[in-house]
Length: 393
Image (cartoon, rainbow, N blue to C red; front, side, top):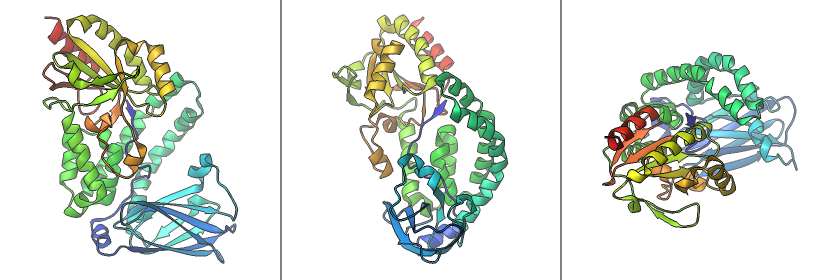
């Protein structure tokens, strides 16, 4: 199962219950830097401000020291970049030039060598200290996984890369176990909330609700808390027993398509993407099912996570032969995601899709009767059995 990236790009951070409560009353932070090693001219800090907007601040470094102040509503992920006057950092190198950590209201001290980002140490942030404790528990597992990760990054063959990707599962399961234990032990930690955006796709709905319900009012009322509550709501809207959210799209051939047009039929919404190897591998079987049941009142709508890559999407549809059914794009809008704005045109949001492939079966009345492929539903074998029970009577 391929995880999808939904939400902000920053890594989850930590905050204790006490630290979070303090952050709601004191919003100013001051980051003081005292650097060693090679001199650099300026420090650039990227973070989410008190209004929830992404902000950046730049200050010159004089005598290896700098000070950056701003306002935040609570502990927040931040990234710092050091650069010299006139230097232009290529976009592809930005990740390698950044160091990420948690800032929180109060006075913080950053020390270390600007040329060796791993040497940087942030003090004065209880959130960062807690995050480092969790990282220390998962670091040995990540070290074991590193050779596999390096092989995966170097592999150019798509199929071979997918096979290597599947080998990550035992390591990721161990990391999840450690992280889930943290969620249980720290129900009101900001890291539990912040990291849920990355783990929500691998947890059952009951587990997600249990974590959310354990939060205090501060966490629930935060932008991240409200975002998680919205995610729970969208997952529920795509589960069996719910009426399928209606939508209208323009299909791959430029023709209008509405879910309401399929009333009276059984229809599967097949959430996939051209870049998703498991999705592509399932297409031959879906073609078999379509040909077997189409004349009996069965249809398929492919919903691709390929917004902005229409040429690649078209090529995948043609190559896999899935143009025999209807195909639309999900309606992804990265700007709205980054600003935590609900997108009514994003079908992944409407149906609570967090990983692909996911298939949702809708009956002739418009009610969802099956969900398959992700952690919220059954397997594709379950899907086959349900279709058999419907059509092979």
